[in-house]
Length: 450
Image (cartoon, rainbow, N blue to C red; front, side):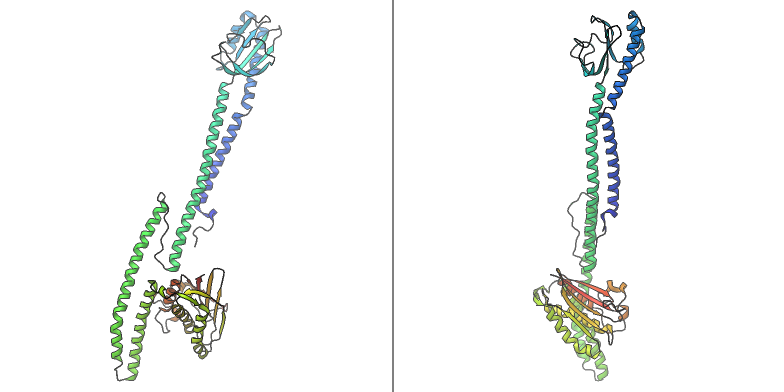
């Protein structure tokens, strides 16, 4: 059984989606900021400021006497925290006004505007990237206006570098969030599958796989395996006590039965020996189940024809079914597998005997044996009164008897023995309600791997 059948339904996936969504939103914001900072918008703002500076300087040059021009320009830009670079030269290239030490060009450049490194102090050591333009004034003078865009270029470089870093980091967060979610879901499903296999097979030897020790799920797996160790030890102790009692009591019961044979009253002798036989059969069944569950029976494994075994069992019980007027239908295909023929005969016999015993007079019994691409399937079904579905999970327990069979003869060990034999062959036992689709009935299905 898979605990989280759909990955998208897991809480880990939802947390991963939230983190990924936040990361993607942050990536989009960073890309937008990056686009704005690296685009032409900042440069256009600098050009607009440069045009305003040029217009102001042209106006001052036109209306202010040359003797007062420098002072008025300085006063006009006194409140500007980053005043522009400017220079005005006369037609004979004399510097009329400016905050640069000399005209920034040896001659007037053919291109009257653009971007280039310019030295405000006239030296080659201090150069800044400058957005500039040169206009000709009304008296033939030239006006140079420039804006420092060094900080703008630095901001663009920082935005690009930081943007790449943040985008890479958030992409890693997206991948990690989904990877962690997938890892958690897979680990939980593996733990669930192991627990489900323990529940279905009853094998307490199963353990959770531990392939790391850094996460909390691995620590949980360690604790779970420790709990299974203690449960297995407790169950083994109980079984060993039960087996010891059954083994130790079998001999005195056999002697007691021999003593009961000496009773003179025939009726009393028959009842007493019958009860003794029932107790002895119960103990023998317990020891048989214990022997099978301890895997000591595999030395009898060989290549067997399962269809022949099933046919022999049917032939054995045919007279009983005829006496009880129970119609039998069979669909038996050829199946050859590896197993113990005696144990398989006993398992099939117990299942058919169970159907005959509890189905009732005149009820139908159906036996089918077929194979799929991976398994051999043996089904024994009847249309008797059946068993409540809520009791199916208890049927393989020792001494358990369904409520419908309380008044019938039996000790509750038949299906336990069947389950142990099938498990020895690495198979599974399934119980089916109303297998013949007639409103009632009970079916036992054996499934053996190929």
